[in-house]
Image (cartoon, one colour):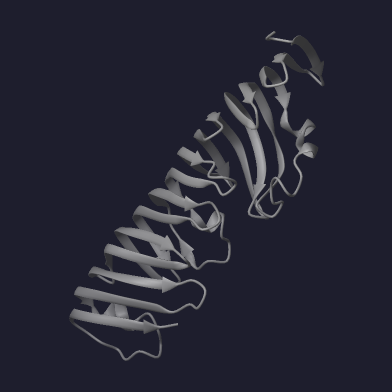
Length: 274
């Protein structure tokens, strides 16, 4: 006779409140769990390295406003769905990046999770939303990440770049082999000694290859359009550029090894190397 056993209970632990109900018999079990006001740091020890790679994510903390999950087991199959809301989250991501002020809303079931996240890293604000499909232990991503006024040098301190970046990126594919396409805009920036304005373009990343399309930028007193690619693991690069009315004088000022020039330069240029 179903249910053979019915359970209900409440408990509290370090300020967190939990309510649990379940029904059990030999073939069919159901459960409901509600958790409120929990501090993630109190339960971080439950996450083993097999569950989360500490090089990817560690030192997790934050205030779990509420979490609810309901499910049932039929034979060997488990079905569940739920939702959680987090604020004041913190974590170290990719070994060194301290991500903080995380606010997240997640709705999930046994097949996928829908995410809405806002966070800061070294003072840089970004937002993400989208879906993660479970895919039998190899999660598939379908996320949109966006930021306004993002300073890459605040995250990657060794890069020779300065300037705020606006971007919207679409991240898809396996979590450990992502594919990224992004629309990028920069009002003003500088790479080493080369300054530029009004940059726009479309970037993509897959299998360590970065591809640039529809590049447009004002620099060296003129305008440049083009495409290019960069292989991250070998540092090979290829660029095809159209130069429009660049100042020869500004070009020669970039290096003492260049001859002193005058006038304007226009034409097609191909650059290749590593």
